[in-house]
Image (cartoon, rainbow, N blue to C red; front, side):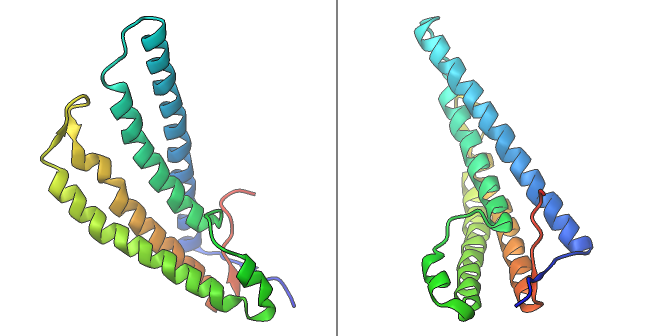
Length: 170
């Protein structure tokens, strides 16, 4: 049995770029959270004056980091999924793979619908220590939901065409 061909074309390139952007955003967010928490610890124990904004800022960035990192994980196939059952059934392993992608896609649609609803309902409330709308903290939910749904569609189309989604890095 031969290996599936990699995906190619402008849509695949755009998908790879979006995935790379998600990974960069998640990486920068992780660095920013680390810096904020380090500053908070330093300020609390050395300066004896903990900044009021640091915990909320780290939580705000955490939401963005997790959701965009998760979206990239769907595209790059490094998200958590059960492969033991899939590997055990051998040649018919494409069926549970499709089911796993459909479940992931349903989660993406859920994030779009309910995340957008949450953004709208929370937009008028402010995070007091940051001065930004609370809805802006939830904004990555519908955005990541759209990305997750698109990445799942890319995987499903690749499966039905006998191809494989090309990772964003070598």
